[in-house]
Amino acid sequence: MKTTRASERYAKSLLTLSIENNVLNKVKVDIDMLGKSFNESREISNLYLSPIIPIRHKLNITNKIFKGKVNENTLNLLLNLISRKRDNLIESILRKFNELYNAHKNIEKSLITSTFSLDDKTLGVVKDFAEKLTKKKISLVNIVDEAIIGGFNLKIGDRMIDCTVSNKLNELRKKLINN
Image (cartoon, rainbow, N blue to C red):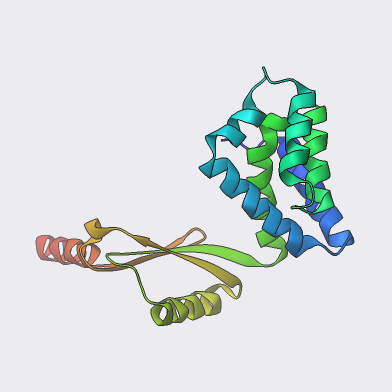
């Protein structure tokens, strides 16, 4: 889904307000929970995306679900979006908020793809390497893909470190063909 200028502005406003009120970490937890709710519950997603459901019902349901469970800033954002008929932007606002949060906290998202799930010690070594390379905090996600045969593939921002067996075999094949 494309991020609109409005989504960026709402996300930036929420981030700024959260920093000013010293509740940034709480709002981040709320945003992660909302994102998970949207991904796992078709009913919640449909509630906000449906133009058929009256605004007052959306406001009542949102209050019942989230009041007392999320920070006041997060709840006010949701209620404001519903009142202004901008609730279709919620998912893109959540994504943009996460991007802005990571930039604010100097966090770089990184993916390591391997043939099996890596243990915590190995992930820690890779994370330390990536942090030294980028001079940023790294949020590392391990993806399992048996198609890479062996080794690993590390993606840090726009950089790719390919240490897979299939890549090494391709490099060897190219060298043999060229010689």
